[in-house]
Amino acid sequence: MAALIWFNEDGLNPQHQMVQDYADAPRVYVFDVDYLQQWAIAKHRIQFIYESLLEIPNIEIYKGETVAVLRQLITDYEVNEVVTTETPNHLIKSWQDELLRYTSLITYPEVYPTIDSRPRRFSHYWRKCDREWLTL
Amino acid sequence: MKRLRTDLEGRAAIADYLQAEFPFLEDAGVLSPYPGGRSAGLERLEQFQLEKYGKQRNFLDGEVGRLSPYISRGCIELEEVRQWALKRGKSNSVEKFVSELAWRAFFHLVYEEEGDRILKDMEKPKVSMRQHQTTLPEDIANGETGIPSMDTFIAMLKETGYLHNHARMYLASYIVHFRRVSWRAGADWMYGLLIDGDFASNHLSWQWVASTFSHKPYIFNRENLERYAGSVLPGDPRKGDPFNYSYEELSEQLFGGEYQPERSRTSGSYR
Image (cartoon, rainbow over all chains, first blue to last red; front, side, top):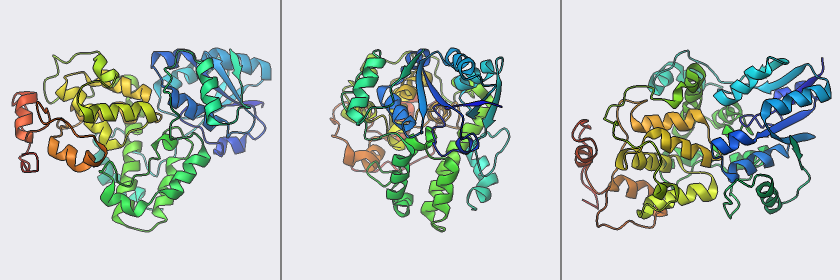
C-alpha cells in the first residue's frame, strides 16, 4: 500500500523507526497557521521545528490547514495510508481523528520503559516504576 | 496551502524567510541559542556533564542538559537519552537525571489519560484562587514588572525560547501566587514562548505550582531565589521586595493563613 509519512511537532527524528520502515514514502510537515496564531507560538519554536525538518531528507514543508493539506497530498500522491508518531497532544490527536475519516492511519507509539494506568502523583509513579526506569 | 522552501542556508536567512512567511510572528530580533535538529541535540548530549548534574541541577548556573527542546520536539527520543544516561553507570546524578526523564513521561501519561481536561483544574486548589484574574497582565507579557529578577527571566524566555526549570517555577509562582493571575493564563503564555512547549509538562507543572495538581502551593522567598539564581540575576531593590520574607510570613500574606507550610529555615542573608 502506498503511504505518506506525516511528521508532527512532537516527533521530528529523521532516524525514527517509521522513516526506516517506510523509506520510500513521501515525508511531509504542515505548519498549521491557525494553531500558530491561536496559541501565539513564538518564532524561536517555529525556527527550531523548521531547522529540525531540514535534517529529514526529501522533506516537504507546507503551511496551511493541517487536515486540508494532508487530504490534498493524499489525493496527489494517491496514497491510502498515513504514517505518523503518537503524541498525547490533544490538538494533533484531533487532526489524526479527523484524518481517519479519509484514510487509514498508522501511529508509532512513544517508548517508555514502563507505563502506569491512571497515575496521580509522581512520587507514587516513581516508587512503583523506579526499577524499570533505572534498568537498561 | 503553500509549499515552503527547503534550500535556505544559514540560520539568519532562515529567520528572515520565516518572518516573511509568517508575518504575524513577533520578531525576536536575535537567533535562539538552540538550533533545531537531531544533530544539534546529539551534540548537546555529548557535551552534557552528567556527573555534575546531581549537585548542580537546581542552580541556574549549574550543569543541566538543556536537552528539553530536543526531547520535546522528538529530535532525540526520551528512551535513547535514558539509555545513554544508564550506560554511564550508577550514581546519584544518573538517578536524578533519569527521574527527571520519568517526570516527563509521567506528565505525558496523565495527559494521555485526561486529554484536554489538563487545561482545567485537575483538583481543587489548596488555597483560594477565586479572585485570580484570568488574563495575563501586560507588564508581565512585556517583561516590565519592575522587579529585575522576574523581568530577567521573562527576557531570557523571549530571547532564547528556553528557561531553566527552576526559573520556570519561580516565574510561575510569582505570576500565580504573588500577582494572583490564574495558572491557565500564565501556562498558555509560556507554552507559546517555549521551544519545548508541551501541554503535558508545561500546563501540569503550572498546576503543580498552583496546587491544583499537588498537595500545596509552590512559593519561594528571597533567600531561595538568591541561593539558586542569584548569580544570574541583576539584583532586586530591597525596598518593597515582595520576596524578602520567611515562608510563614509569605503564607500569611499570600494565602491569609489559609495554608500553613511546614516550618522552614527563616535565617539567611536577607533576614
